[in-house]
Length: 636
Image (tube, rainbow, N blue to C red; front, side, top):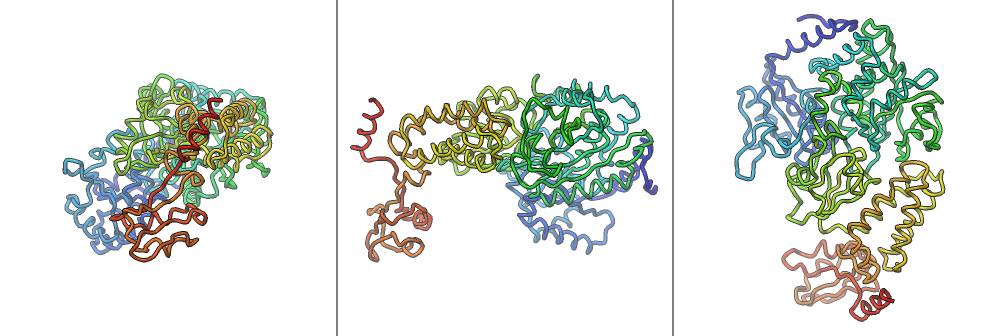
């Protein structure tokens, strides 16, 4: 076996490291354990230890155990794959370790751990599982084969060859032209053409220039960027360095959320390894290109994901946005030309350079090329991380990949784009998912959050939740956002508590549109998406709340009452003790009642009532006489 060079000084050195690593793995049997955050929560840590012990017992040098990043199918974690066959095991536990190791040596699968299709057949590999079969994993595809703490694994998969190619050709403008030709658009929310942004920064006057990875992923339910950093950090570093070379930058930063400790640990180790191999530092690969990279931990403010707020935070100031007529590409970090892209955008760059812009353009649509990673969560059977070509329909993602709605319920809506995105109803399930189509429909791509909702979701309540989130996260610097969101929140509070009037609907829409036009940054200007889209597609729910004091989904507490069906109640008293306010009244073996003057609508009684009785139910809306009165007011 050839010894690894202390420093990689040329493309030849890089290829030698890859060749050396590939030789050592030709006869190996690799057991790959997903060790990303979600699978760790499912106890993949003890599973890894159990597999390690079983491998040590066998004393077979062919066996290799890897901790890897996210495999995607989070709903069925921990996920384990065995190579070279590619066997894919789901819901694996520590007690399965002995069988996995034994069968791996025999080259056979552990059938009880395989995915079972609806027809009863077993899916041995990832490609045979519907969740994976409908995806196109370009960025996430190598995750099961790469230990994120091993630079050699990344090099073995062709890593850093795109950087070597760029440095060898010594033509920064060609790099920018390739990225422009590929049609790559920013995956962080705005969808701005990446190559054009690079060109603006390169042509901007002033030095030094800076490049930044925006890993401030603050959307509720989103974990795309975290999973890329956890699973393949060197792909982001390589993309960043290619961009830095093209722009003319020698200093980069990775701005990462404080709440991502595992990702911080992994990216710091990746930087240290790249520096040790000479891939970060002075005269990289003998090209004369110098580059240094630092990690900056964010303070958890959602608004810091905005470019100018992010640069302010790196400088040590409060993360607040500034006026938009000053572009970051002209005056960003320390008033110098600065280029920001999010994690997924940077990870695409080495693939474009390696495979060519036309390869990238073949995926996706004319205006939105490539693939996109989504975190598919909510009331869907198969939650997890999915990577699909742009232009795929919502229906394909939710039903073919996501496996449909949980518990046989009906699909109601899907929210895309995080808190700043909109909600799309069932009639738009066949909408192609790309930047332009989502925008036309009143939502947005955002960074890739996708929350599925069923018939039990109240759209007024959903909008209220996200408006409250944005109001809490607003930095307060501009009046439209600070006061506008607060006033909108007051209106929602009135609606869900049954105190709103008909004119509140117009006031809600008018305030949202004012905020859209006048807010300083994207947090405020995109906040109306959730308001206007729910008003557009689910107006009848708003009207039910206002005119009939009724929540059709039985969610808004002030509008519901818990009652006990006297025909079903046996007086078992199971609900009596759990009630925190002693609102359940009655004697044993006789029907009970709920004292509405004491009830706080906590729902405990409904939760504990035995299924065989189901005597507790929710009631919403006004009595008939009150409905007529409110309807008359509406007409008047």
